Image (cartoon, rainbow, N blue to C red; front, side, top):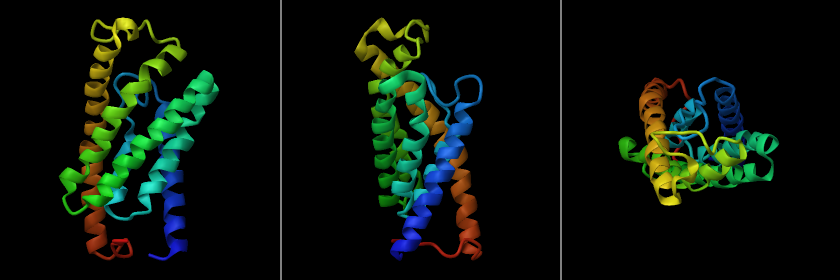
Amino acid sequence: MNRTRYIAQAGVIAAVHAAATLAVLQMPAQLGWGPVQFRLSEALTVLALFTPAAVPGLAIGTAAANATLVGAVGPVGLLDVVFGSIATLLGAAWTWRFRERVGFALAGPVFSNALIVPVYLPVLLAALGLDQQQFLGLDVGSGRVVIYLLGVATVGFGQAVVVYGLGLPLATLMRRLDAAGLLGGRNHG
């Protein structure tokens, strides 16, 4: 893939992912943040099955969308910008690396987010004034290990629902369109 095409694809993916994330963050019922997250934009992580440009594109899109938190919670929001983007970068790199084994490849974004986001999520919730909110009988002050493990389960669950429930059908559709020549051919780097 030539450099110009790579940069253009990464930029478009970043913009679409950021816009989709911001749209979800505007929805009620805390779809995009909190103990259980269903960021519908995470279905776009399947783009890393098709192009390596999705790896930086998804990470940049995540950083751009998460940067809006800085306005809401101050400098603490930078935790989500930095570490949320790292989680996305690692998950997308995993997806690209194992793209020939789709089910396994899509586990990358699920596990990277499930393991990384709960490390800083309690700090963000506290900054938003939600640290006393009860979830399954626990609040953020219930103990770091317990809250982390609960976060791993809940963030992982939400991520798995979106990546496999929405992303996998999207990837299947994209493979069919690609096979029909409607996506301009598959690119392997």
